[in-house]
Image 1 (tube, rainbow, N blue to C red):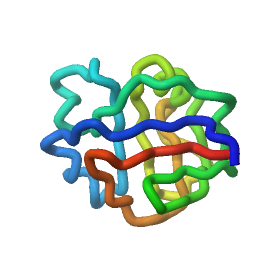
Image 2 (cartoon, rainbow, N blue to C red; image 1 turned 45 degrees about the horizontal axis):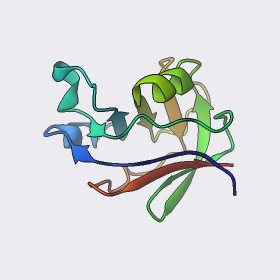
Image 3 (cartoon, one colour; image 1 turned 30 degrees about the vertical axis):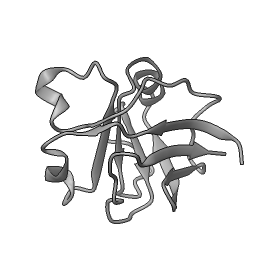
Length: 120
């Protein structure tokens, strides 16, 4: 499988678990605004090697799930800021332009050191 995107979680904001019921995972580069940093997992700003699109695989550590929708702004903020919101709701249309939707699933267990990938 081709790696489109890969990153490693460097830190966990104090409030990331507040989104568990909504099944939302947010990542942001080291430059996250102070008011958002507590709600994000911190990652490096890494390049994207290709186009992110529905049908690809979103992987956290050993868990692989299907991408169902990609907001038009998500690849740009991911590439430029390391920022993206992932929703595990199975939606085929994202409700916000910076969101990538993943098949309906409980929120993955993400921790410092977890590897996040998008594979084709």
